[in-house]
Image (cartoon, helix red, strand yellow):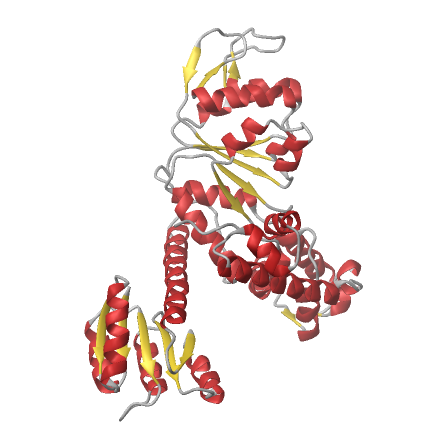
Length: 444
């Protein structure tokens, strides 16, 4: 990471520069704000460490100017102990964080590592957005919330690989959209994208639909039929609602994935297929494996990589943008949203997620009598949702619990026995909560 250090104290400046260079960073040092700006104009700085008290320009003045030059630059201000009011002011100017003197080097390193992750996520999201903007496919991505940004960053990384991906999330979270996005971002965006809804095809026709059949293979087979695996050759086969796949067909799908060969119904000739498989489900396949409803070996074959989509209630920051998008798409006359209507829509739980929000906007626009969408125009379940406030409280409690779990794991070097002891819970309860929040140890 390219880091700029601006501090008028030579000892502090050299201490920080030496420490960060040992961590593998490219460091530029400046003795005052003027020199810092000169360096910033000629070097590709990604992070600025700015001392607040410097001769000439103060740290927050330097911050304001470098943000004007590059809004994407990250910044940490170094402040005097207890200067809370100043810290609040610089955060409003766009600083990502602040440190109090004397600087704790371990804490500084942790903050830099966190910012590096954010920079990587931002780069991934920019690439995804640019690709979608230039795509011929009808894909629209709306999501600036941290949860959605993390998801898009993950999608960007898995798209380049040839491995199977399991996309899981609640109904209406946009699993098909993510599957198409993975295909679009992959190495063969112009190759076929073939979708199969495992819940919509009758069991007696599924094998033919997946693998194809020869002419005369069964009554009604009047011609040779190429199955989805063949039609998706060199491209992507998307198995939607894969949790609904009948047990008898799970073993045949597993064989096709393992051997990369299929056999049409009514034929003895094997056909080699080079198809990437994406699968999606709103069910807990791991739980289905434990009850014998889904093959465990097929589960692991499909879930080489996985993408978990956040429900809408965990990305409420995106709701206003989604509402604006749907209103632009479906409004037949100029219509605006009353503030209290937006408040009610943001607070609603959305068990049907983005799809439900879309339907709510469609229905409300159709039935509204005026040019202003009022709370009375919303469906009854939205107007009378008494659990909305309770849901918000639960989200905050869940976020607090998740932060406590992460803190305990990091303090105990991810030794679950020690973390459970520190939290005052059993190791079994800890494992349950790790699964509940999707917490995994970061890869080293």
